[in-house]
Each structure stands twice: as C-alpha cells, then as structure tokens.
Image (cartoon, rainbow, N blue to C red; front, side, top):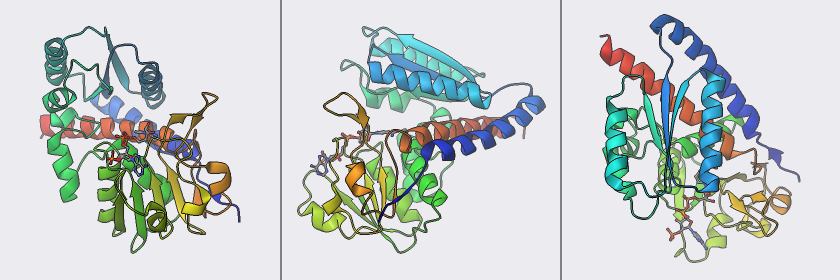
Length: 288
Ligand code: NAP
C-alpha cells in the first residue's frame, strides 16, 4: 500500500486564494486593508523564517503587515507597551508575537496583554475558553490547518478514533478539542503515556505533535490510517523533517502529510483567515 499524500501547499494556496478574493472586495468597500502586526524579539533563526513567511503570506492575500523586530535585550515592560500600542492602533486587526520569547520575558504576561479581539494566534485564555466551549471566532492556527487537511482528503472524523501525540497548549490540547467537536473519539498521549504503540496502532486518525524527528514509525500505525505530521525538526543532516518516519509510514498509512509541504503552510493560511475574521468583526462592531 502507498498512502495518498495530502498536499498542504495546494490546500493552503486555495485557502489563501479565497481569502485574497474576499480581501480585495472588502478593501475596496472599506477603504482599508486588513492589517497584521508581527512582533519578533531576538535573533532566533527559525523565528525569523516564520516571520518572513507570515509577511510574504500577508502580501499574497492583500493584507498590510507591520513588522516589529526588537532586540534580544528588550524588557518585558517595553514589549508590554508595544502590545498596548498595537491594541489601540486602528490599522492593526491582528497581533502576533512570535514565540519563543527570550527567557527574561513572561510569555503568559504578553499573551494575556493582547486584546482578545486581535489575538489571531488564539492563545489568550479568553479565546482558549471559547475553543473549549466550541463557540469561537478564532481557531488555533496549526490545529485548524490540520482540520482543513483532513477535510481536504474527504475523511470524516465522526466516530473515528483520533490519537493526538502531544499535549501542548499550542498544538496538542486545542487539536484534541477540535477533533472532539467533530465527534471524534479522542485519545491524548504524552511523555508519560504507557504502551504508546498499542494506542497509536488503534488510531484511525493519528496526529503527531511531539517535536522529535522520525518518532512515529511504521509499526506504530494502523493500516490505512490518516497520519498528520505537525512536527518541524532538523535531522542529523540539518534537513527539515517531521515527527513521522515518512518513507516507511507511507507504506502503511492511507493518507499522510509530508514535511515540508504539509501542516506548515496551512498554519500560515489559517493565520490569514483569523486576521480577516478579526478585520470583519472590527468593522461589524465599528459600523453597527
Ligand atoms: P512541545 O510543547 O514540546 O510539546 C511536545 C509534546 O510531545 C508534549 O506534550 C510532550 O509530552 C510530548 N512528548 C514528548 N516526548 C514524548 C514521547 N516520548 N512520547 C509521547 N509524547 C511525547 O511542542 P509543540 O509546541 O506542541 O510542537 C510539537 C512539534 O510541532 C514541534 O516539532 C514543533 O516545531 C511543531 N510545530 C509545528 C507547527 C507547524 O506550523 N507545522 C506549529 C507549531 C509547532 P509532555 O507534555 O509529557 O512533556
């Protein structure tokens, strides 16, 4: 068996096309483009790549992007002041503070300071609460991208055993919630899970969000399963790779996402979607 490849680049391109068409019409009507502020602190090379990709995507869909590249020594207070300024800036619909932040800055404090209506990453506790309840305007970008990929493969989640490896606030937990809202039967695994392989072997849909190169091997996967690889790691040759041993797992799985070209581009597309949502909601509240 050879798995069908779910092409994240193609799916993200179609999402961005749809956003671009809607943005062009709204920009003409409202006389203002949606605006995304991206804040980066320090010199993390991976973060710089992510920020550049986000700026590029903004240009592709017709958004304005405002970049704030701050020095590593920036104090927590200075960053909080910038967030306050962006909260009040009428040209800014979405605020994204690229994580991780330097150790002397509390990520929680910064996330909590972002206006929930501009929190396009959906990390603010108010938005996390909305996600739990299933009543949300912003979806967490990476899990939302995964949901789009599963939908693009024509796979129904209802009644399926969905196994998520990873329980981070950014990926694992919100991922599990979105699958639950679609009536999946969800098992969340983590570093203390016993007999991981026995659990993953029963997954109809297996989501790997571990952060360890080639962690999911073919013997952990049920024949025909949908395997979604969230991981972004560097292998021994410093090449980008996922959490899944792609070459061997694709012989067993029914569907699989590659790395690169799977979940990564979808995360950015969903960020654009959230920014457009924020823009539309602000317009609605400003012009009743
Ligand atoms: P994280 O915060 O480090 O969480 C990793 C999770 O994996 C934790 O819950 C951890 O369990 C679990 N884990 C670690 N070792 C394990 C093991 N041996 N068995 C089972 N579970 C284990 O990472 P994250 O932020 O969720 O990110 C996960 C991966 O996704 C990373 O490679 C990251 O770069 C990537 N990522 C990609 C995108 C994208 O757009 N494609 C976006 C975000 C993240 P404990 O909780 O018990 O420690």
